[in-house]
Image 1 (cartoon, helix red, strand yellow):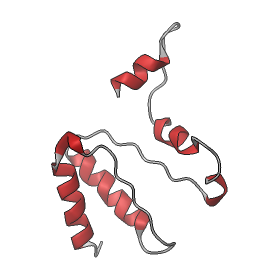
Image 2 (tube, helix red, strand yellow):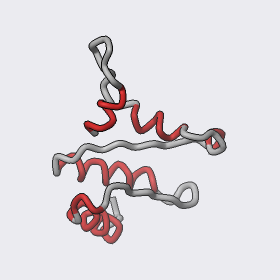
Image 3 (tube, helix red, strand yellow):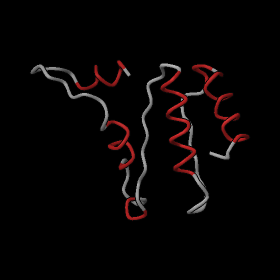
Image 4 (cartoon, one colour):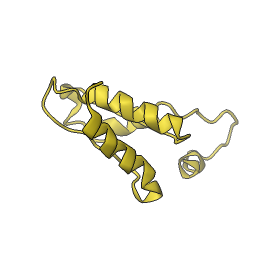
Length: 92
């Protein structure tokens, strides 16, 4: 991947434990953020961590909570009637 120093920082982040609950990568287009995120998700999964990711498009930047929809898209919906959605969120 050619990102040894960045991946080393990601490993430190993942090893730091629950004090670090969110990782945000930003930067200009074309600098390899997607590749780095994929590496981070793979490393987190290898450690048995639950991950969520969002990747809003340029047109979505002005829409509040659009990223939240992406983050929660991987959460399985409640299958039984009367299930409290807040309970699902607390379980995360």
